[in-house]
Image (cartoon, rainbow, N blue to C red):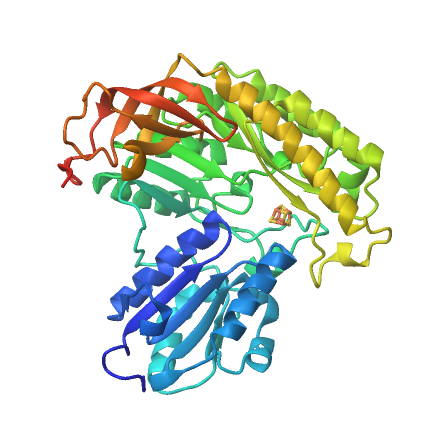
Length: 461
Ligand code: SF4
């Protein structure tokens, strides 16, 4: 690399988008570390500036492209790379729109990164990794994880569902699952290092099909990961309603390590809109899956994704979404205005909903969800819940983390149960004393499990 010696092997990496991207960035960081790069927090101090991007909505893509355009200067031969979905979606055209870009690499080609970096280091100015036909993305030997207490494992890449509005099948390629043996090996390694929480990842995680002779179902894999010595919590995301089979509910019921939280995107409450979206289920079919989850012995909470203003969505369709949301009573919702994406089929659909109407519907929906969340969270006041402690806010003298049901919980320690211990990574029992729509507040009752000996329970400085 031609950059000055002080910055040549430093990199700055910014991540946009979903948990899949967050975990992809952990793999990229591992690859860079193995090549002798060290991370810096300031892009201007980096020899290599990387953006790991998201193109799920036009706004997200524009934000990235704008960021790329404004970061033009390349003193000392600084290199610039775009990774992830925007890279895959735009390909080599990025070199034209942003001539200062040197590397364009989609997520399905991260296994080629060492080779691509080597070419950059040897002075090549434009290198690409845009192949979608690889199935080697799982064999990433280096992963530099962000948290010692919580880890992601990708079990399935890509998506075959082909929803009419979505770019993921183009940016991440076809569905390909990782062998159960390889997943278990990584889960055991993570747990042996002291990490107690594992999240199994996939764009459609429950569409998992074990390619090995073992032929494990997704439910079996989930259960087995939950039985690994040292694993206290297993999450999984994102599930597709069509593949949400009863054995998944049975697995959650039969294994307390599996979190009692399911993220099940519905996208719309109208069967007519769902057909236009090509979601492959009707409102009634979705509600039958919800019924099966609610019939579980454990109190499994639900969260979802919703798009408002899909082409042709009428007020009546929208009201069906509102009634479904009330009926299911989600603990959490991610809601968005429909955003047409280049290359998808829905771009061609007639009868677009005016922008102002989309905004109005989004506001109505979010207000409803806010009320439901507040009611649900307030029902927790006076009860105890377990939280995995992720950090501390000195300003408020509070710790914070997530419960197994994925609620954000902030808590204090008025009785001094923890003394001067750093609780990060501990599982604590907390009594809930107050609740807002987005989080709970409580007081520490006891420390249920300290961070593993491998990580240690430190004393606050
Ligand atoms: S299931 Fe549909 S929305 Fe989800 S990633 Fe696949 S194509 Fe996109």
